[in-house]
Image (tube, rainbow, N blue to C red; front, side, top):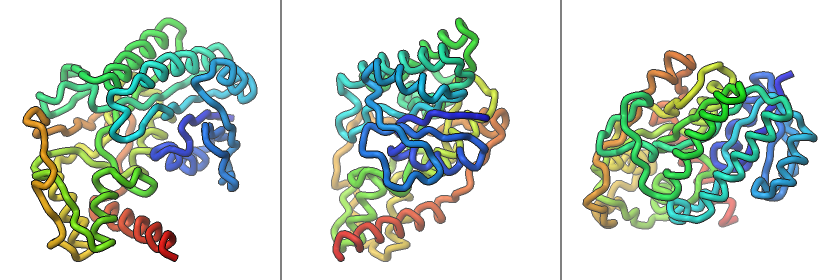
Length: 305
């Protein structure tokens, strides 16, 4: 029996991974630091503070997992880039993987970030593009990736590192780009944006979660970009939303200033994901945006009822 611990299981990506893991034949042990959901949805739920070494030990000894899918991290928008919490999570993650291995665990996949790359190169390839993290969040992620890789080689632990690019979908923080534009337009309010010329790589959160599960269920090692591999401007995303809602006149480009140092282009090479992991995304942009709009519409309707 494949038995997986999923950390950050109530988070944006984590909650979207659970059903896919179950469908892949995993016995899923979902970890949250929050209140355990009333509906277990086929998962075994555990409440644990992963910053507490003793709770990590108790969790691992109780579950004895074969696989570990680690999403948990400090992720408050606007704060996580420079928070001291990043350093605590490096320490906690190392302890988690050490306990996992010592209890007999076989395979671990952790979540990284495209901010590990040097964005002046624009096109991000795992083996070619230089790494140049510049803020505590990306520095800590890159450091953890190197330590995980070294530890895995030392003790014979199979490991991979999924680098996340831009994502959107249900359950995202409301002040992020896509939900903020959706909610503003649905409420008949002006959606204030930057100039929108930045070229990025967006992938629906369900695809991101499914990509991580496919990576976990493979034997591919090392860094793998979890992304679409398709370039799209921010304003294309914004107007795609506006076209569905019918409020193009409420889009205000250029209302939010951007830094002169902001990267004009950040797009992933997804050859490893496609060819080695053997995974392809399911959502096109139109389908993903429409589903996300409908989810936020239901949220707003529930708040107002």
